[in-house]
Image (cartoon, rainbow over all chains, first blue to last red; front, side, top):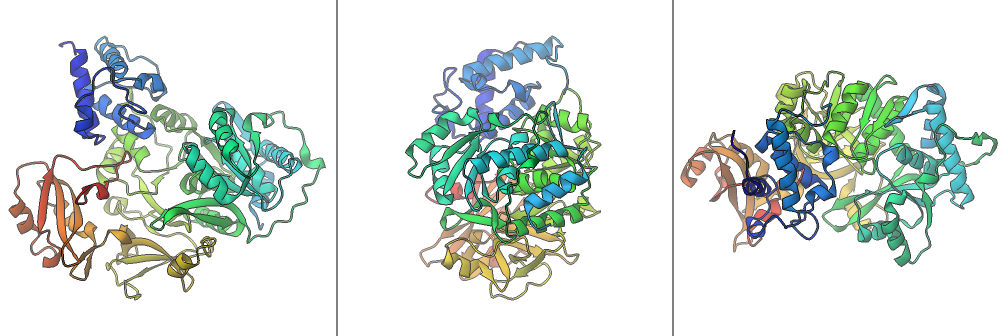
Length: 101
Length: 495
């Protein structure tokens, strides 16, 4: 299986933000890895971050623990992308991360 | 048993050795919870809190919220539950509107609370939840008597209802209102002390408060509160503790249905999974059923009335959209616009009569005249009752499209549009005309090739001509709120 590149992951996350969260594409047209996802950046609230996570799980076929959903994770598009890449690597290596559900 | 504190004392005596609240690793028996509540009530009394005083509660779901709620009620004060996501301006507005004189909160909220209290003109004391006695080490406060004689018709809590009139309306529900609703819920949902409730819907809102926290404690059941929505925590709590009742909002089971778990959680212990506050999307309900083996049933209620109806029908697959039949002791009538009782299947406004319903809004005489009539509370919700007596919500009064004097319910058009095989989602709107009425516009998300003409042709014969859209717009997606509700206002011209 080919390796996902950070830029591809970033692009797919942006697509989820547009399709699942109805974020105006104009707002996201200038988004890059330094764009904050919370507050004065894209301004996601807690419910929206969960919707985004569900979309990410579906798109990348990974599992994310809600306990990992800290504000730090959503600091920027880049921090989230990095986290998703780690999860993809875990999945490819056959590691499920934490135990349980 | 006339008041909420009396109700809790009587349940606590009957089920003294049973778990009342299981908060993480902390298992608190009814007898211990009662001591904890009495200890808090005495502390509040010593701080000068008396009958009729308003005490705000700003805490997430958990043991401290439960203790705070009943502790405030035990001194005869009025509980003002606050959403723990509220910001400075909101807190200030609600504190002022209710005349809050004490706030029970956690040190986690210290910065925002100090900020609010520093600008507030009226004095307000602070009580930190961290100063509550540990549930297991509580001393026996029974030596001191609070000596409070509370009247059944006085408010036990203030909540707020958003409405078309602008600012949120304050709603004071009495001890009598709440006790009536709780007994109706217990009778209708057949709740017993053997039940185990998941408490994940916010206790600060009527849904989580009445249908999880209060119903559980009224029945002598066990309550498993969760401070926030966490899919793995929900799944683990349900599975490990054999939770039997999960009442939330549609967003919760929808997210669980969509989630990728490492292994499928065992939800076989659930005998009731219900949602309220918004419609549960049918497709996600089906997905939830396929994943977990239980359908999500719908409840209907409002802050003013408490719970109105519940769908407990045996043939649930065929009535997933229904909010069921009125719960015990609640009367629902459907009134047409000219004040007549609607026929079966005819759409009208739901009106509710029950002892759980408030009698008026405080200080809003004009609104009271409009919505409280002949013993009924007019909900503003539009719906119908089918021949089997099942209630269906179809919209809100304000969403009518006025076409040449005909009032058209947009949901009726949307139902037809969405039955077209090429239509994924549709919204019907009223677009103003120069003649003072509106024309019907359809905004549609397609899942395959289709033309405007085909849509219009498809509607012919299925709905009256005046309901057929004269404008059709295709979009890639519809604007939605984070909980999946379509943002109709964003589709209006000029937005």
